[in-house]
Image (tube, rainbow, N blue to C red; front, side, top):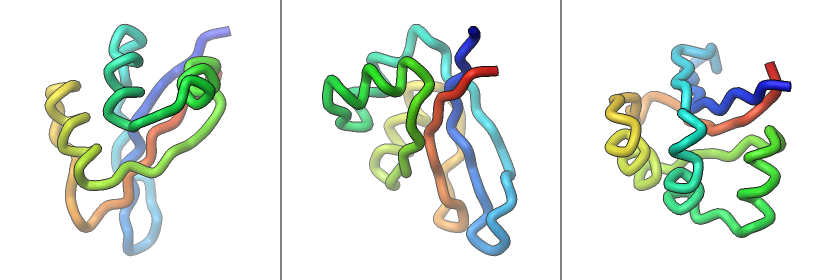
Length: 84
C-alpha cells in the first residue's frame, strides 16, 4: 500500500479543488512540527489517516518547507494522507 500526502487547495467560492501539492515522505517530521501535532496525530497521519485544516501561519511555514506558493485568503487549505 502506497500512501500519498498532500496539501489540498480549495476555492472558498464553490469548494472546487484547485491544486494538490505532494508532500515528500522525508518532510513529514517537519510538517508535523509546523502543524503542532501530538504523537498520536503524527502516527495516524503517517498511516494515511486524517485530514487537517491549515491556518495562515502554518501555510506560510509549509510554503517555505516545500518551496511552493499556495496560500491565498481566497482559498481553504487542508492537509491529508491516504492510500493510492
